[in-house]
Image 1 (cartoon, rainbow, N blue to C red):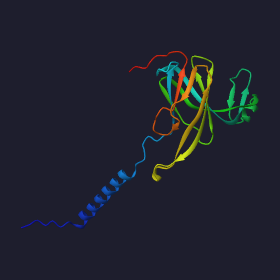
Image 2: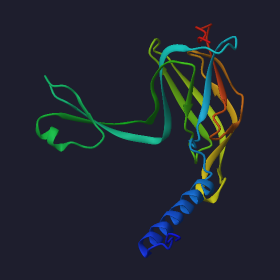
Image 3: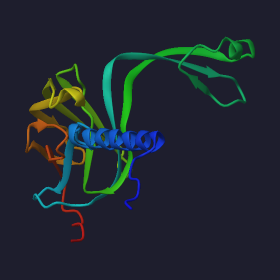
Image 4: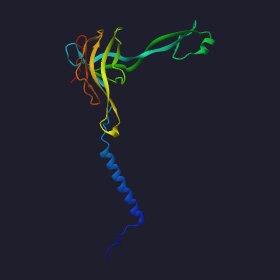
Length: 210
């Protein structure tokens, strides 16, 4: 006598859900071809003045010069610490502080305290044709300024991945506090991770371990 292989309504329902779930998962796996690492960054590599890749052992901070200025409110009172704020503080004036209003450059930190590195990666502006980078060093008081001219344009690989903002580097120059010279090696800034700019620092620094 053959066993009864007929499925109950509950078993048929569970089987249908399982098949539908599997199809949905497979569809998701094969339809989403967006790259996981899709940050569009300009990649810099570090070299000594002779062109050898190096580990730059100084600590550097990179800020970018934003358009316009910001207002700073400074409050001073004899025997108390100076207080600096981005917005007015009338309560401090009521406490006897003297208020001074000044305009400062509108800088934004892109990279803070990078140490013993062989490279760095920085975002680029979308709507300006020139980026101004200010490089500060811990070991010296002087700073370097890097000017990068570029075009920006939207790029769509797949509709479901959204729009990326790619850049084409057009020109570059820098001051010479710690930088010997600088050059563009790959003008196409995208999410592939290729080196776009080489920075050649003064002298010969320590070569990174193989």
